[in-house]
Amino acid sequence: MNKHILEQFLTDLKPLGLPLMKGEHLFFQGDQVENFYYLKTGKIKLIRNTIEGGQALIHVALAGESFAEASLFSSEYHCSAIAVSTSEIMRYKKSDLLVYLEQKPAAMKGLLKMFAQQVRDLRTVNEIKNIRSAKERVLTFISHEMNEDKELYLSMPLKDVAYKIGLTHETFYRELKKLEQARKLQRRDGFLKLL
Image (cartoon, rainbow, N blue to C red; front, side, top):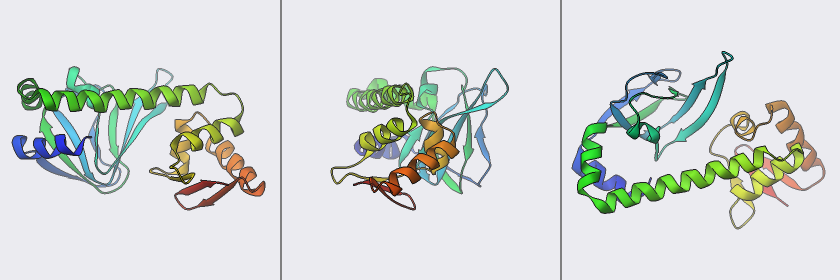
């Protein structure tokens, strides 16, 4: 979320803090939407129940991010939110935030800009998932996410990255190992670098 917008939200809307323990649910798929959330510390997984009875990882929110933003324009949550680690959430009343955005065009524009970036990111992930070769899928993901030094500091566990790009974690780990052995990749805990 745009830091300036967040500072305005914090000042003007006076959110309530909510601590969550690892494994605790913030909300469940189908619950009525009453709040907008910002993650101050920790990690939150957004999980959607599938028709087949499984679960799909939608997103992993990290400290400094808002999440479940689409709920601002929905009456119920389309996923469940679960704390991956001890987390502190800032919760804003949905009704207050919507009124605020109507009264503050600059804040509305900032929120739209943030949503546009999320759409771009989702489109990129969808493109990556359409690549047939696991190796090319991994390389494309890394090259898209890396910084100018060809480094990628992972914001989520490798297992979640694998799921995000549509690979089993075993296949993802195997491809990372092959790239390391070929000296095309350097890997440390939470860090990847293309060589």
